[in-house]
Amino acid sequence: MVLVGCGRLGSAILEGWLTTGAVAAPDLIILTPSDKPAAEAARAQGARVNPPLAALAEARTLVVAVKPAKWRDALAPLVGALNAESLIVSVMAGVAAAEISALTGRPTARVMPTTAVAQGRGVAGLWCEHAMASERARALFSAMAEVVDLDQEADIDVATATAGSAPAFIHAFVQALARAGEAEGLSGDAAIRLARGALRSAGAGIETGESLETLIRRIASPGGTTRAGLDAMAASGDLDRAAGAAVKAAVKRARAL
Image (cartoon, rainbow, N blue to C red; front, side):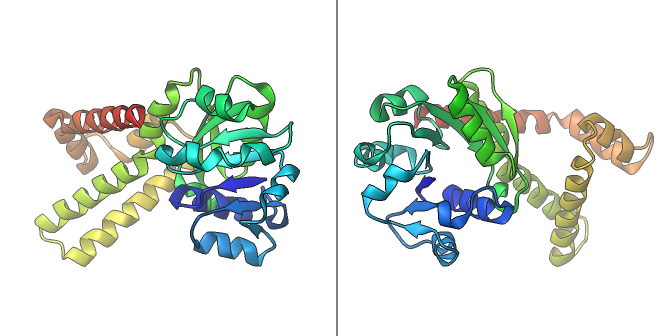
């Protein structure tokens, strides 16, 4: 197994593999142009970091986690060292599988995971036309993420916005709730701690597997404070508008990369 790139997402994937045992450190080759704490932690457990390219002949899968603008420069020098049966798994936004396959001559699966894979609690959109590459990608991520199959490759960009980028959108909303609580009289420390606690509580609800509508109804009693707040959000129209704008902007940027 080769991991190319160990930035934020690459490091999260690496940490998730080691945390869940999905990939054992001695089976890992990590290619990174600079020192990364996650790579050094994996090295301490037996992973090889930046070995001679000849070592790549052992690998059955190459996971590409570099910045989209640099993917050709990162992959081109590696192609000749790969064995004939190796497959590619890309976690890059905005780079089509056909482009990667054209350069590498190998089937490519595309996966878009959230960085919570580092804690074994992520979600990942998966698209691939090649059965074996799809199975390989699923095996790499299923231990640390809920893997969601996508109908078409274009959906990867929407998955990036709806899941990959969305934790930041949700954190921004929680931050706004904290500011609103502070505006109503809470101290800044109390407001942020309560808002963060609310996010943890919402996450615990999700773990039950119940529908979002059911979870909302469970908290929002008719005539109660939660229902009043939800009605105010609906009346303002800002929530759906803001969510739509965020997703559309993220999709547009993914397709422009």
